[in-house]
Image (tube, rainbow, N blue to C red):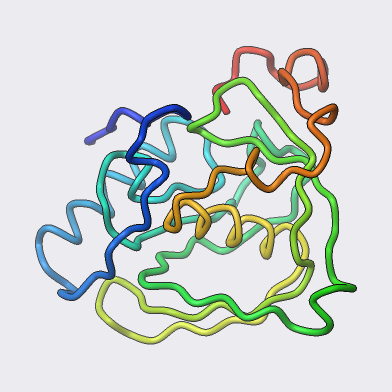
Length: 182
């Protein structure tokens, strides 16, 4: 098991656009994915982007196939590896925004109310270079947008429209474990 250190907000490398993956199925890519899976599992994350562990590549993983202590009421999302992603908003982009609470492993202990598109299509590749394309909505769509933002140097507080809806988890949601890392 190779749990990596998760970079925190303030680290300049989290604000940089990541590079596309060119070599699929390589030992380096497969090791990166294993490190990301181990790190995400250790932190009870719903997703993780390569830049969060200091790797400047367009690679995200996400999924919640069991109850996640950080998001106990969230719908299940299939475990997914998504490389070089593209997002397409489905429907009217101006009429498709939904507010929802988000946390981030790079912004530990905090949550914020973030507008995200409710319906989207994401596409990209798995670790072997096989194409992926899914139409999703709800929490699944939110997780994908959040993780892909990391690839473009965006952290969720940068998407917020009302900073009065940003605070510590143990204050905003005392019913959640105040010691769980976000």
